[in-house]
Each structure stands twice: as C-alpha cells, then as structure tokens.
Length: 333
Image 1 (cartoon, one colour):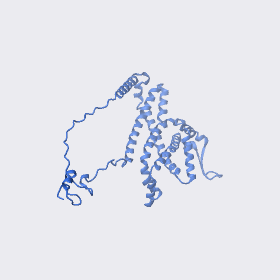
Image 2 (tube, helix red, strand yellow; image 1 turned 180 degrees about the horizontal axis):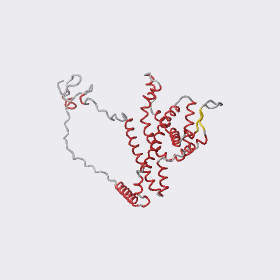
Image 3 (cartoon, rainbow, N blue to C red; image 1 turned 45 degrees about the horizontal axis):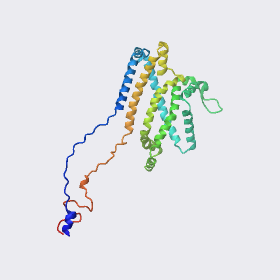
Image 4 (cartoon, rainbow, N blue to C red; image 1 turned 135 degrees about the vertical axis):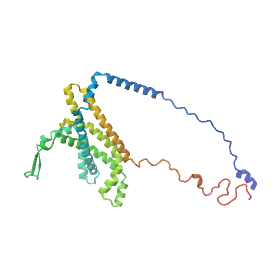
C-alpha cells in the first residue's frame, strides 16, 4: 500500500525539457495617415511663414523699429502694473467672498451671492465704463454721519485717477471669478481635515491658513494662473475708463500717426506673447511646488522580504520533511 502510494502520488514529477524559443520580432504598426497629416501641417506652416515674411502689409522693418520703442516699453510697464495690482486685490477679495459663500449665516451668504451675480452677469467693458463715470455719479466723497454736515469732503477727480479707477474696475470684476475658484478649492479638501484640526485645538484662522488652504492650493493654482493671463489681456479694455497709457492704446496712438496699424498690432502681440510665456512658466513651477506628494506613491508596493522566503503553514517543501514532521511520501511508513 505504501509502495502504491509512493508510485502514484509521492514521486517527484519529471521536469519537462526546456526549448529555447526564438525572440519575438515585434513589428511596429504603421500609421500612414499620421505621416501625411504631419507633412501637410509642416507644408502649411512653411507657406504661412514664407508668405508672412514677404507680405508688404506686415512691414517687418517697422515692427523692429517700434518693438523696443520707449513709449511701447513704458506701456508694457503700465500693463504689468494693472495686471499685478488688480490680481492681488482680486485674490484677497475672492478669498473673502469664498469664505462668505461657505458661511452658515444666510445674510452673509446672500450678500456674497448677489456680488457674484452682478459682477459675473455684466460685461467687464460695461463695468469699466461705469467706473469711468464715477466722478460724474459721485462728484464728492464725504465722511461723516447721516443727516449731518460731513466731517471731510473730497473732490472725486482729485483722488480717483483713471489709473486707480481702472485697477478698481478690473479687480472687482476678477474677484467674482476668483471667489468661485477659491470656493471650489476649499470644497475639494475633505471635511475630516477640519475635524482633525479642531481636535488638535486649532482655531478657525490656523485651520484655514495651515491646514485647508495649503491643500486647496493644488486645485486653486491652475485656474488662477489662467485668470492672471486673462487679466493681462483684459487690460486692453481700460480705455473705457478711459486710461490710455497701457500697451494696446499706446500702439493704437502710434499707429494713428504712422498710418501703419498692422505693424503696431504685431508689436503689441509680440509683447503680450512674451509676458504670457513668462507667466506660464511661473504657473508651471507653482503647480509643481503645490503638487508635491501627489502621485508620488508607487502603484505596486515591492515586498521588503522576498516572497519565497516566507513559508505557508500546512504546505510541504519538496525535498524536505513536512511541517508536521512526517516523512515524505515514498519513504518508510
């Protein structure tokens, strides 16, 4: 009986002969359509560049003449100032509006909603036109108590310049969009983070600045970068205030004298592209900074100990005695 068992199930199976197979020769799938499309696109790009280089209306010598003109460079500086000042005010006000939108107080929430409804529902050019008429609507700015003589009174024209009104108009409009961006970022953070911060004894301010906002920045930064680039281009609308020292209006004034509008438009476009390219690079590094730790964990965790070293209870290792100390099949009974 023992010999029968040994012959039937205890004998080690004979190893199968190993035949070395030939290496697989993988043939790359050809895509002739892609090649044709690439050739067509390159040909169209080459034709466009050749045509633009030789088209008289573009007047490239005129472009080179005014590209670094002092008036154009100064206008670029005003454009950057409008962009930076407006975005700083818009971000601060947008954070406040986002917190108001998330407030449990219905009055505070309603005020924030009405603000967003007005400034997102009307064109920015219309809003800038209203700000240009601010001195007409409010000739004086007074400080005092109602129904009493004012303590201080200021002429609106003396303290509200076109540059200041342009910044206010751009910032108040942009704050409505920044509020929704910040609110989306705050909602992306799990509520358990708030609960954990409260359990540690952190107040609302420390919870928001040290726990919630740093995690929300990963969601806030990309659309905020897009808004900054959009703001740079929106500054071309401040002629509605009117403010005429920014890039678009300055090139328009020069074109009105030289009677060459196309080269001056190219000059303005080149400067817009240069500045937006720099902003895009800065946005890339900001996104990478706030995305640290996201997606860094590998998909498959490697075991610290090789799998073959770990034994499994109830199994036998070929060539050794079983786990319970019984002899291998085929040995003496």
